[in-house]
Amino acid sequence: MECVVQGIIETQHVEALEILLQGLCGVHRERLRIHELCLKSCPNLGLVSSEVRLLCDLEQSEPTWTVRQVGGAMRGAGAEQISVLVRNTVESKISKDALRLFYALGYRLDHELLRVGFAFHFQRGAQITVTVSSINKMLKLHSTDEAVPVTPGIQLVEVTAPASSENYSEVVAAVSSFCEYLAPLLHLSKPGISTGVVPTAAAAAASLMSDGGGATL
Image (cartoon, rainbow, N blue to C red; front, side, top):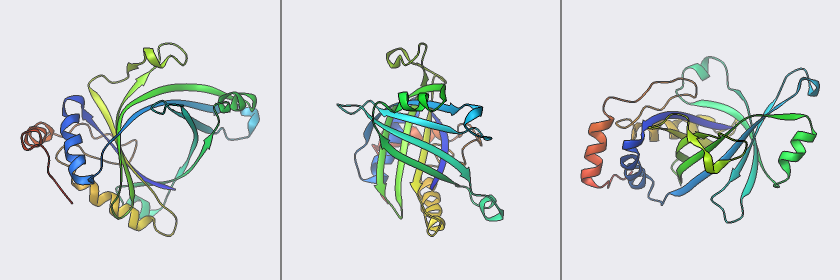
């Protein structure tokens, strides 16, 4: 399973966010260019349709493929009281022929996206990953070179961390604690809960740009 929160930030403030993340994480960013294909099963594969995502890492010299399935979120009173979404996930490396295999199994392409940006991976009470990316749609099937932004001027920020049924409380606490440092620039919440851009973003970004970062945890 994983713990996850999301938020949005205006593209003009992304450089300031990168400076802040560099200071907080103490590691260098990694470039991100992911071709994501969302496949959905046909009715004859079961009573409940399923969805899988094939992720192709285009930043590698030889593109690598991963299959990812996101399950249901944790429910109950405890889940409602925390600001981080805890959900089941299954992820595995696959070959470049996987798309053909899923088509043979009866899956069909629902939509595809291109995520372009950067990511930070670091240890801070949990193995946390922060991704900042623009979400782009393809004008033609699989034509990543002709992708255009879905929401021009806005980028998606996602903070995730792997967890288990035994330690998810600690991971939730680690993610929540880290997100507090990003609050002047953006608000992070459970996926699907849109809070828009924060009014303090412009001032916070200007301060970070003038200081050149330097924040440490």
